[in-house]
Image 1 (cartoon, rainbow over the protein chains, first blue to last red):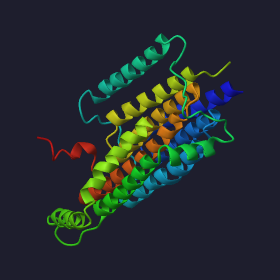
Image 2: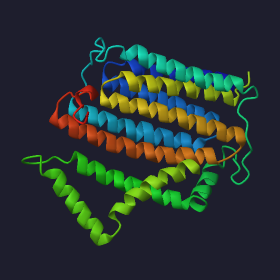
Image 3: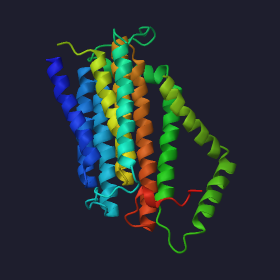
Image 4: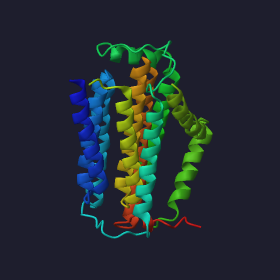
Length: 212
Length: 101
């Protein structure tokens, strides 16, 4: 049963990824991306990561891909792209070689480790079953990793502000805009005394997340 | 047949490689960001697989933070693309060589 679910969703995932690679129309690529993300969500369920499966569908398929589609529609780039031309000579063979060697290296690393991945079993954060996955994840996030969670909040705030500043439509000549924006942001930071440090803290948040 | 962790890792390796190939071959910046998302998903799959293999919640916690970072990366990346596309309709990444030395 597990093997059947795995094989079917693996086929869905890989087909979606292939679709993103070869789709000529960006809208089709976004829809293939949804296919891949749903396949990965199924694989998360198969491994009892039920909360992450739900978040995967909500955040990726529900928010990120919709954002992609909004931008595609907004910019009017939803026309087919000519994939026949190769802008840099030899780009595709080299890319294929890089991809094949990457895959080869990873698979060799897997095959060499005969018993599969090994390592010390987790002691401080035991993995529950699917039923209490969300509770355990929440407890771990808001007790042991609460500082990292707050840093991600700062990161998201910085990202939103950055997106608004970048995508703002400018009236009149374009040249003075960056200076004005940078100056006003620097002024705010000087007054509140937490402008620039936020950025460094937010990048520290990534490290916290990976180390968690 | 028993699905072992190695199966998941092999699938994640394939997904990561496909994302890398897409990133290297496609010229539309939107599709390039989609390929980055594919690679991030491959890594997420690895985290969850190893987490369940070792019985540790840390893998899933890492995926949570990767999701947040991926979301903010998409937001900023798409804002940059919108800003560029307003100036130059239909620009591909090969046209954006202004900063080349």
